Image (cartoon, rainbow, N blue to C red; front, side):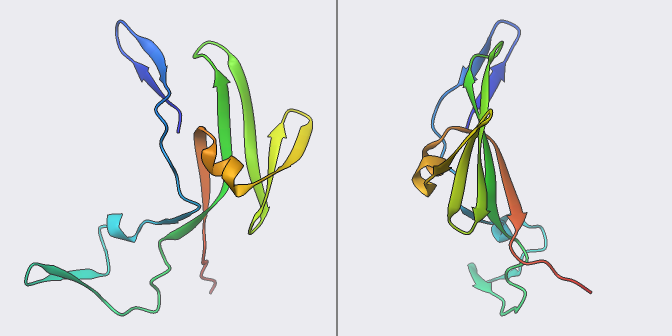
Length: 117
């Protein structure tokens, strides 16, 4: 993932590679986690709604260039494993490897399971 560092003396793009997942489970980071602490160990509560906090990657925005100028491209998922690279008016097929190897600037996830009433 691309990040930027700003200080009184310095503005720069941080280029350290950070991986990101296709599937993201946020359950361990939720305040109302389904886990209860017993005797120093965590036990997962049985819950049919254990997918509430699961998300799937559907788009990645990339930036090539400097802080002052550059070019944006994106990867967009059409179906489960069908990805496309969008570079201005040029749209080409892309692989999951292309997506995961990219230096994402913005990542877009959607909830895997939506409840309807």
